[in-house]
Image (tube, rainbow, N blue to C red; front, side, top):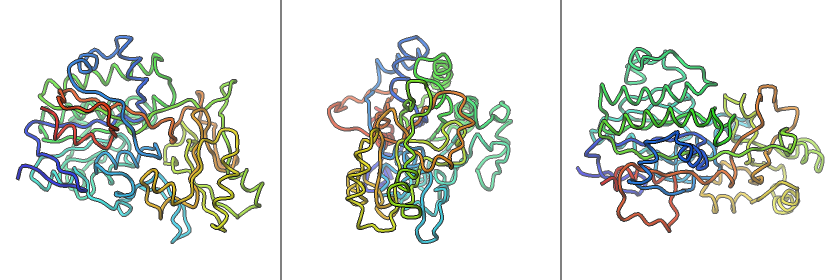
Length: 406
């Protein structure tokens, strides 16, 4: 066997270690600022000798849909993960999409393991671990719960001792550094054939491109990536989404509380606003992003209400269920009657009373909309036939590293 087929795409089996890195919230501007200011010397050399484009992530530009798009090589319409959070009409409950039961397609990682390749996955937050490691034989653990790993569940034990770092706080840059340090140690000790590393966007939620903290994060990452390249790995870097300031001129959060607006128009209990950015880690964004779905008690009103919402100052796009599913390749049964996307500087909330913003100690920065769709796609090997005029997507990362890395 020299190749595998996953979700109607063919991938060559790797002849050298192949690594895909998803840098959470890594807007292209972070790359430009860090490289220009001399904080990423390895990446600067890589941009000169390898391959790089600005690609698109999938919409909604959130963590779960994009990580699963990367590891399946397919959009949410195929793999089913359309947010971090959704409303389940069957049970009438709002639930996290962390359980593999929501996954509708196999992953490239599991297929590579089934083909006899050694596969390792390290993710920052545990919310992704079970999805990324679904039916995958190999190493799969999170930095968040590295102290709880077992051979039976995670394919490894003694992760803290292996990495040589203490357990990091989930709200810290150290969580992402643990991911990179673990990747280097796994390469030194186990030399997996394929590795997937996924970080957290804690820094990007709090610091703009070019800020000292953002540059320090990029410099840290650059050092570990150079070590991975020295080990002989082909590396592809991408992101799950970009990041934008969502603030007014006085730096306060710039939010449309859509549930309050709809309740004012139609009365209570006539609509349900769902914010798919919601996850267990809302301190740094308050569950505020630029994408929402709306369920209606009277779906026949969808087009009329869509036009009314679209007229609100700060709203970029409102689509009905069918139109959103077509345009953004989403699973129609999981997105509500309307999809609402705000402009770059505006976030969408539910009801004001449902958002605790007390944890925001910096101006709000978030994601979810079209503004945060551009992401880097970079490889440390030449791609001689690279067509820079076509639309590349972050879900092409494994195609690059397995099919085009020299």
